[in-house]
Image 1 (tube, rainbow over the protein chains, first blue to last red):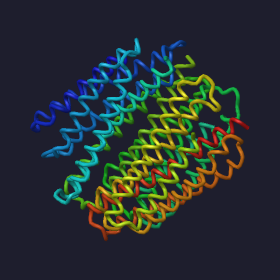
Image 2 (cartoon, helix red, strand yellow):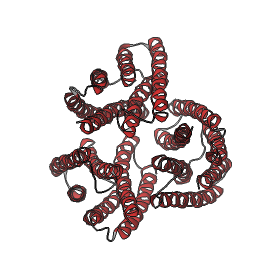
Image 3 (cartoon, one colour):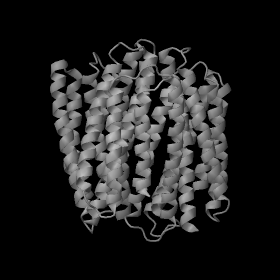
Image 4 (cartoon, helix red, strand yellow):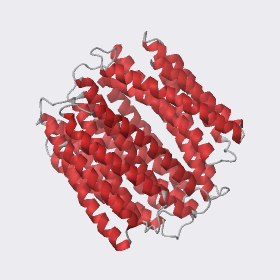
Length: 192
Length: 192
Length: 192
């Protein structure tokens, strides 16, 4: 079930990529598909919670499963919110750093989708964990440079407010990938 | 004790309603009463935590009780913060959508106060959970429309900053009602 | 290990103090030392998590240790972020209230560093808990006054955005001290 949730996140990160070059009618259609992906993610999370609450025995610690499912759900919510804000605020042009943010998210999504099936065997999880932490640091630096860029005086204040909210939400998505990786590490250490 | 905490939230939501039509001297007096309600809420939360920490046996999972008490406390804190910001920023006029936000909060407060006593018998909790989730989706849509309205170019940037902080805090209160409902659902599924 | 983490926070709070009077070249050097302190804090947190995950028996509830280590880590992250933002945004002058915020953080850091070794004997923890809660309320009032000051019309909107982000991050640091104190209280009540 975690694998299904992670595959869904890969779908979401590809929609973010598509958004970059899209005109306003294409954007509306991407937002529609993003909403569908987010609903599919919600269903996956509820299925995990329901099975967890009605099971006496669980493969890992109950708390860790909750945290993992919740963090996967958060990633999807943040990606959907970013797309929705771009449409809602009718943003003309996204600053260049946003493309870099989305590339980092797409790479983290792939790594996460590859790692989830390995929770069965506990193979290769350390490499995944190290790489996602590295990506999060990279995302953090891109994000801070973007903020400095927004505040350099070339944008008007209302535009800064709109764009800041979008780049902040994308940064929250990067943080949520790190939460997923940290929970996977916790599970792996307990099993070892 | 959860019922006392929820009744207090109903009081808070009524004070928010009063705030809408109030002039500046009435506002100060409402803020005073809100502060008293928030302190009463703090006392209720501390009483729950204290009893929980000193009890060996608890009616539900300890974690769930913590989460439930904490989320009820969060709702009160966000409502108190909203009132305080309106007074502090000397906001002349709140945009129309704020009234809709507060109506949703008042409805969620009533439902939550009705549901808490049912934790004894586990009756009618599914209806409560579904309805609060529906209200949270409604609050989310009102919130996003309000943001688009604030950014439409008719407000100056400082005014946007003030009003955005207020509508964001009200949205956080709506989210906290959903957290309460999700925790109640978790408890209900475990008991069934 | 908690004591090492708390000592590190004292170092961080002293760097914040130094930042107040520093010119731009001194600021860059302070930011460098802050980054080093934050990395030392990360290492301390990872050491706690690792030992916790690989230990069968722990001195306190596993959950409480996680929460305590995580909250100590949050304090350091917020303080580092504040320094980094001052440098990044090339803030000319910080409003007066920021000095008061930092003084409260320095006092809370000292109290926390003094309290951590007492987790062994459980002595004097109530005084610590009461005093940190008092400091957090004081921080909250300073923070709200600062926001009202930023919004009084004397700053331009972009400057408000920059300064608001800095004072908000300092307020989050004060909240994180309270989380630490609440977790310590939870541990103390369970042990009594």
